[in-house]
Image (cartoon, rainbow, N blue to C red; front, side, top):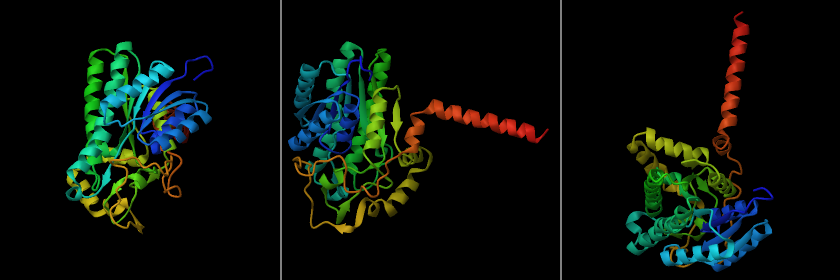
Length: 336
């Protein structure tokens, strides 16, 4: 954003911790006005303080995104405070780490309402404003798990598949209407967030993201980039690319076999047993320990060469063309 341009007005759901909080930071560094939506008031208050400390303006609005009325009220509050919404980012999620047969109906329902319907309601509220103005950008924070589901996360994977499906449908409608409103989905790898300390878990050991693990600032910058560029989807991290392409190219049975062998133990910290079932934040927010990073700082990557390459395609293409020309010239000299 230049000194003379209007600041972005942005709404971020799930902004009290993890990737959502990091996204709010990324926009704040560019002077944005940010509406912060989540259930946990303490985390929202801290996130708002951080946004303003980084140079943005913040409005914290305690919101349960599974309630359309609350999402609509939040949008009204943001526009009354900051003006028309330019970017809406659906990041809120909730989950239960458990085998499907150990998951209760109300648990599966709640995880689906927050993760899937939260994105649906956020998109509805944003689109009704943006299509009327014929401008705006919606970013769905997705996952490689929207392409390749894994064990212990049936509710979360189902929601991410669903978000990808309804986003594709909306994208076609917008194109039919020749609308200037854009919608994109950013597919993430395993991220070091508070999700793994907050989530409801029925596992014997502490849950963890599927390695390799990335710090939340990496997807946050990807979301910021996606909000300002035309891209149908943006894949973050080599492991996400591998999972998505693998789901397209390899037989499904091969992935099932691999995940049956490695997917359950690979999502648990080997030497960190949990004493009994952990209730987590599925139905009520956890007000303590709201933060951007989770407990895996020592394992988490701070850079993604793959993301840099995919957001700098012209430079990469130019470099490849230059190398090809150099190689051709070297070969010509060699065979003189």
